[in-house]
View (cartoon, rainbow, N blue to C red):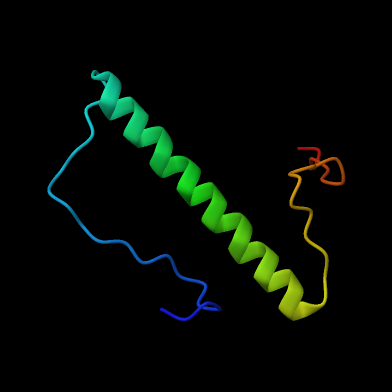
Length: 68
């Protein structure tokens, strides 16, 4: 995998996380947080390569909802 590669590579496991168990919930949250971090890093790299700005603080105040 190249640092600028926009794809997330994962290894498949036969392990499933049981949301009924505490450890299963913890692992689900860990995986979700890892995905969020990967997405932020990928977005930051994209913005850097394209000359734009990426707000790593997660402030979405500049985003507006469209009226339906």
